[in-house]
Amino acid sequence: MNDTLLLERIRDLHASLGTDLAFLARTFEEDLPRPDALRDLGERLLDLGGALVARSDELNAAILAVLPPDGWLPEAGTRRHVIGLVHQVGPRPLRCGAVFLALCGSACYPFYGRDATNRSARHERCESCLARASSRA
Image (cartoon, rainbow, N blue to C red; front, side, top):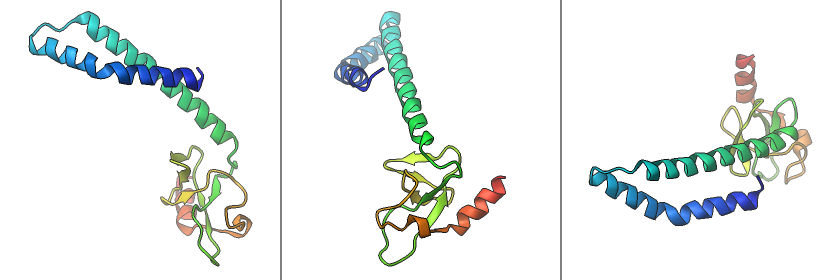
């Protein structure tokens, strides 16, 4: 599914969800829950949830395909005149916004190569990541 259709489905659900939930709540309060209304909302939520999970998997696969196989990524952020570190993000790194979280909790650039300070090639490996990576093996 393309992102435009997915966004349309999200907007549709957003526009109708308040009314749907108010209606359902009222039927429960009156001890007259409507199975058709429950099923309709449940199916819409399941369908949208499935589409979101599938799209997330596609995006994640594309990102993982460009990461180095050894899992070492440069630290995010810039520290002037200091050689930064590279961190082990593992085989399936945790994406946190525009960065990945390393085994030690540090944020790392989601690419391999040179960072914004153009020093990635000289970064040392994080001792905490080395210890955690060796304990996982």
